[in-house]
Amino acid sequence: MKNIAVIGAGTMGNGIAHTFAQSGYQVQLIDINSDAVEKGMTTIIKNLDRMLSKELITQNQKAETLANITTQIDLKKGVEKADLVIEAATENGDLKLKIFKQLDEFSPIEAILASNTSSISITKIAAVTKRPNQVIGMHFMNPVPVMKLVEIINGYATADVVTQQIMAVSKKLGKIPVKVNDYPGFIANRILMPMINEAIYSLYEGVAGVYEIDTVMKLGMAHPMGPLQLADFIGLDVCLSILNVLYSGFGNPKYAPCPLLVNMVMAGKLGVKSGEGFYDYTTTKKAETIAKQFI
Ligand SMILES: NC(=O)c1ccc[n+]([C@@H]2O[C@H](COP(=O)([O-])OP(=O)(O)OC[C@H]3O[C@@H](n4cnc5c(N)ncnc54)[C@H](O)[C@@H]3O)[C@@H](O)[C@H]2O)c1
Image (cartoon, rainbow, N blue to C red; front, top):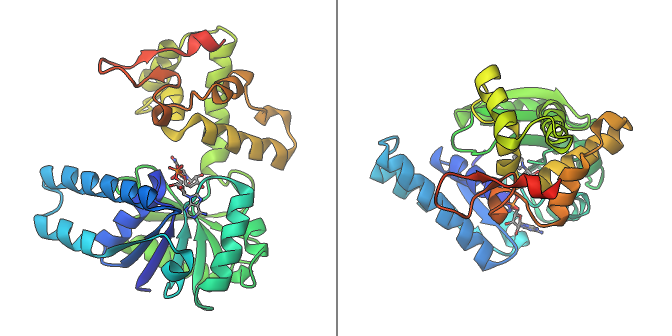
């Protein structure tokens, strides 16, 4: 495996491209327009500079990593030589099905098609292709260059040999792959999202404030970050869409998203990416808690 195509140059896509390129793979980084790919490249350069300043990489490694990445806004051109395609576009089921139909049409017949989806069924995505045995979930964690875990999701039809190849590639990146089966939320989000939702319910019901909830979980459970701050980092829209997948997938009301989360997303308060969520990221001083006004 040598040529990798990454679809989407956003938070996850640029991190995935960076990680493969740093391990010597040739990467095509693809998005819908040149602004999006440029934004992705700017983030990669910023992250490489941070690694350089911490002496984690050399100037040569930075140059080699950047030389291994080509940007592309034409999906067909970007995937036509790929051995492995990793889709990291927006978390939207219809969009992903459309992209996978195109990937099936334009990429080499032997290429493996992976999705970085947080929650959408790999089996459903695989079913729109003519190669469901070569479709798999490759769920990287944010920030990709730093986080060790890759959750590998076997769809209903994923071939064992494909799983083994993807486990091996993940190890070559210096990651630790963990294999799970394809049920709503897989493992990571099936466990994480109910915790985040419960934290939001606790706020909504007035049990405690943002600071108090996050502090209990940080100091009491040794979590590096409280659940409300983590939700801000993930994106409240992403959290809502994952909870909806769990809710509809299991048909169990315990996964119903808290009305406060729904309200905040409708109000455009999406967390770090919009500048406001449970905390205010627009001020230069320490983030203030702001969510109370939505209750
Ligand atoms: N953000 C996280 O912490 C996180 C963690 C794990 C997995 N994920 C998953 O990774 C995927 C990407 O999430 P993100 O946070 O990077 O989103 P993002 O919004 O930061 O980036 C998505 C990118 O996809 C691009 N895009 C949309 N349609 C496209 C198309 N047809 N072709 C090419 N590019 C297209 C957008 O322009 C955007 O640049 C989602 O499936 C998400 O669930 C996210």
